[in-house]
Length: 139
Ligand SMILES: [Zn+2]
Image (tube, rainbow, N blue to C red; front, side, top):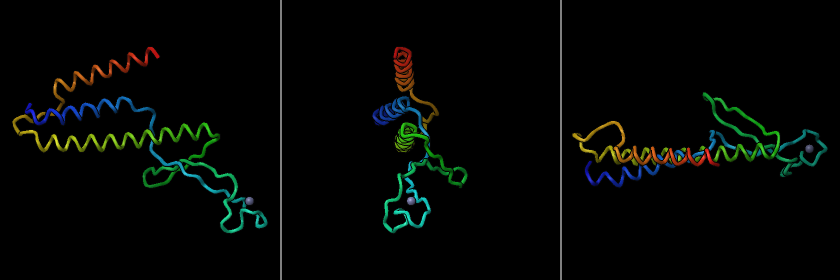
């Protein structure tokens, strides 16, 4: 392995380890929908009125259509917010992983080309998985 690839492969390995730390994740975005009851005499019918308590929803696109999910209580909303935030982290990590891989691909000499990770990368990743498993069993 050429030396100039080592820092990039170390960076890739670090990113792969970060994937192992991801929690429950799912795509979508949480939005607050202002509720208007529809009664013409209610304050919510006036322009610029903030309306009634907002209803929180999770929306996401599935096969070109927007699906909506609403939450029965604030705890369910908070759970969904965390899952959505985790999905963003996953996307950021994925972008970084692709970016570092593109650099590696561009620098790797043709004769050194191979599909998998280096032995060192595998070792680090496996030991990291073992560490996490050990942790989760204990606590
Ligand atoms: Zn109203």
